[in-house]
Image 1 (spheres, rainbow, N blue to C red):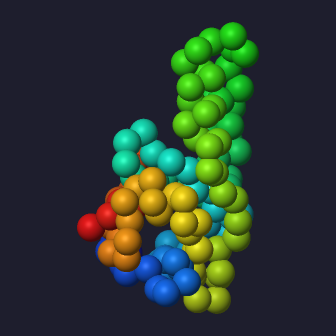
Image 2 (image 1 turned 90 degrees about the horizontal axis):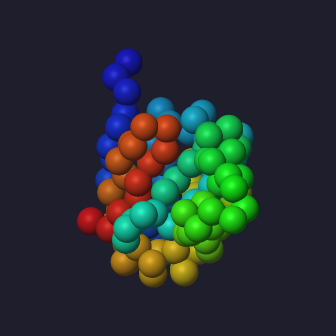
Length: 119
């Protein structure tokens, strides 16, 4: 079976994104959505967030770079569960606004997380 690294979708009227069925098990631990480095969003499984991102955000309390990363990734961060039956994830309005997403979405795998962008 081929690995899915890219998909396009439309958000429904309740700001929900349907994750392809082949990817849903990747998010069984939960999901974390944050602002990206630029005008896009990051979508992590809770497992990846806890094992890879959170340790990097600990860093030196007096290091400005670490502080900046914490602000960037924690400002507006949401955690939740993927609706496994229908594979949907609801986005908060403030995150969609940050990324300029209205309805059409592009999702691209970036290593162990996904970039979610406006199409």
